Length: 448
Image 1 (tube, rainbow, N blue to C red):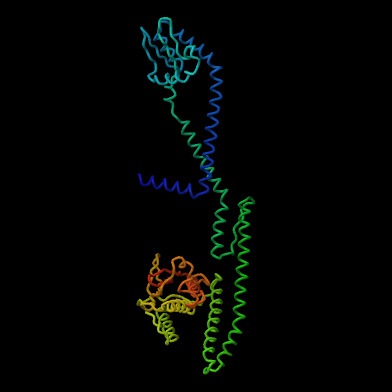
Image 2 (image 1 turned 45 degrees about the vertical axis):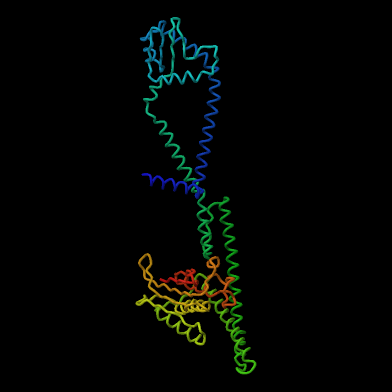
């Protein structure tokens, strides 16, 4: 039982620290209890002072009559008859009679102690001494009260619990727009601007939801304008780049012009790749990518990409890639062109940063079983270069990001390769994860 109790306490503390509703209800309860306690304490003090002054002479006179009724010397029979008729207790002590009607002497002691602050030169309010030397103490008998069922306390507790439940339900209904605002903020953060936050009430929370909708609409317009501008610039750049490359290729391949011709062709090729990557990133980043799905054997596609890379880099010393293919891989419905782009970008990135490495980069394609039993494929590309700083690792798949390290602009690339790979993986319902493999960088793409 100790462990469930500890878990319950932890859940309660967690709710109190993280739930605005629970804190508001607790605040209401504490405020109600504090107000009730203050009111009761104040009224008790106010009434007790007045009661002492007004009721003391009456009680004193009544006690005198009761003592006279008991007699002197005190009669036990009369005292018993008195306790049966009235809710009082009697304690007689003296030279001849010693008798007590109520075994709870502490009740009388409390009553005697309660009135010790009355004037010392007068006899006790509930105590009298007879002429023959007997002392008679009177008190309020609580026997009847203790034997009565304590239903009032249970009813009070039930009432408090019912009020607490009503207060929680009302606070939950009052703060319901916060759930809508949170869900809407999550949608807007993921790029889904089509469904605005519902405005349920015209109060402050309703105004907040309306303001968030207005902000989201403005952000959506700015993003669409940025995408439109990038697409327009990219389209407009293609034609002059094509003409410039054509004119450059017409230059003589020998003589003093040849080195400048090759350098210009490389720069034009980089600009062409940049424009292509920009157009592809904007298409993939729209959130409603039109994929041309077909049955793709990733093992064959990986071999094809590695062969093409080897042909393009046949003169380079760092053109080799170690390929590891698990047999009998499942055939998935993929966009073949975009998957080729993903593999080529990952391998280009690995080869670019493998200069001076102990071994060439590797490409692993293996079977992956999901939690629900589905069959997928995991692609892992690793280089054995210097790797990246831990602070830069979370930003590598961001557009145009280049860390200030060995993976800088001097090493090539414009910062769109890994970003395009992430978009391709997400468009197919997969994921891309980067980690430092020590040495090198490892990129894992999960599909299916």
